[in-house]
Length: 439
Image 1: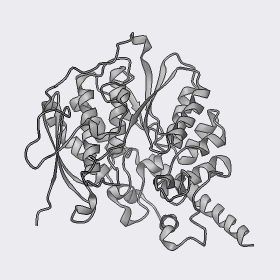
Image 2 (image 1 turned 180 degrees about the vertical axis):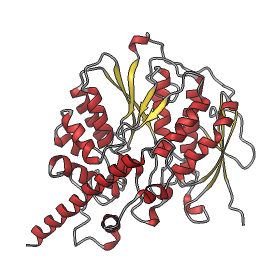
Image 3 (image 1 turned 180 degrees about the horizontal axis):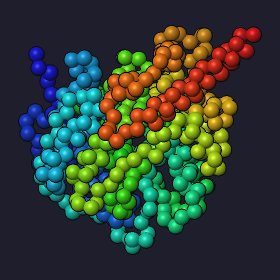
Image 4 (image 1 turned 30 degrees about the vertical axis):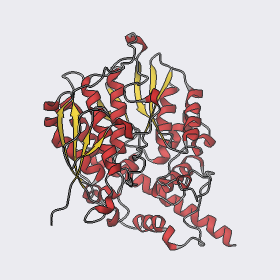
């Protein structure tokens, strides 16, 4: 029996042509976005080229399709077959980029995608940003989530004496906007150069009364983030985009066979970035391609915390960042906290702060070593401890996801092993706390 495909048709405008029969229409209006921050009203100092507009449109269409297609309806309750039609200014370039794009989508979502491109026919005059003089453009652009990694990079770069602005691209986390603003202000407090922020929405909404249930997993959001940063960089003529993520979570080796593939996030994995750069090189005009890089690829979480500390940020600012994969505050019945304390990102965060400061005073909803917790809530902790007790080698490094041809496997192995040492220190620290509490 052939698994049915979900067919989604991205409209260039809500009032554009109707999609073919059996295709579900999508467009920019499915995003919860303030009118002043729509995709055509960016706070950029120059218009982006057509290829960057295309990349941004494709990423927004992919993320919306991801949210509108539920995994539970797949044959294995995970893998989906999705066909997506997107209008672009240069379809012939995107046809060349299809193999690289399929590699990106397959790696980050674990799904079977077919993306088809059709000519873009504008139905309205776009509202372009004002064009400023070249000296007013930003000189660097980076993602800024409000997490530890992006904070460390932003703090380090903002503290450098320079005349060119640092442009930070953010996507709001619903219920945690104030926290993100607080962390951003901490970066501005260090600045020795101009710092600007471009804030966008990642919230996809369903039509009222439609009965549609959105997919909870959002594996393609990394592509949305990266494409938005590339769009900004292309507008202001910046050749490199930085996506800061510590090396151990960028590789994100699975703690068990059940977490292989897209069951663990791969947004900044070297294989993902390699193919994203291939997509950009295919669709960009000659001489205008932008390279996406991870400046923290060789650092552990503890190293990143040390970078932020050495840039001048106090421990309390690092502890106010958002790192949790499933923040309790997203659930109405949960406590008013930003961190569950139990997911793998929380465990890596704990180990990094412990490495840099000797303790972690972040208020977590729970501790995974608490004997009062039911076994159903300690799965990540138990899997982590088993993983730390096993040997780890080059075969493990490439078993879950390939590496690009220019990858330095010795460097990647070394960063994973140093990260494992930080996690072992966390386990020992937790054991000491539990013993003291028991006595």
